[in-house]
Image 1 (tube, one colour):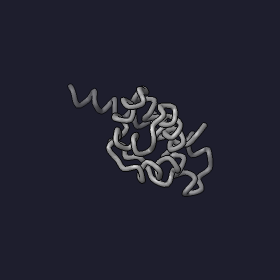
Image 2 (tube, rainbow, N blue to C red):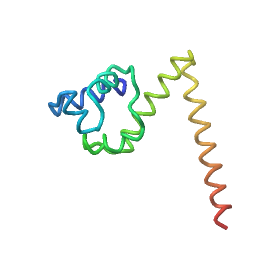
Image 3 (tube, helix red, strand yellow):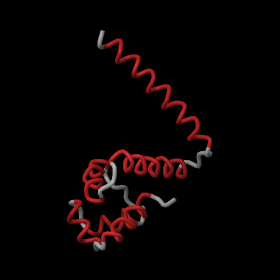
Image 4 (cartoon, rainbow, N blue to C red):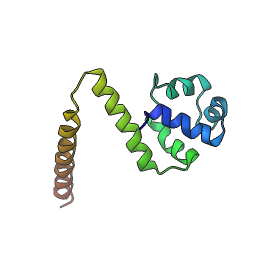
Length: 108
C-alpha cells in the first residue's frame, strides 16, 4: 500500500506524463504536483473528481484512497493508536444511521 501522493505519481508515470503535463491537465502547477507526490502537500478535495476522470478511476474508489491517507496522516500526527480507526468506523456507522433516521422524520 502506498500513500496518496505515491499513488498519484505511479498513475502519472503509467500514463507517461511529466509533472508539468499532468499539472496542466489537473489545473495546478508542477511545483504543487511535486509536493503532492512527495506527500508534503494535500491535493484539494475539489480536484478529486477531475483526477478520477484524468486517470479513468472510479470516483468513489479515489475518494476512499484520498480520505484513508488523510485520516492516517492525522492519526500519525497526533500519535493515535490503530484502534482509533475501529472506533471511527463504529462512530461512522452510528452517525450514518442517525442521519438516515433523521431524513425519514424530515420527509414525513
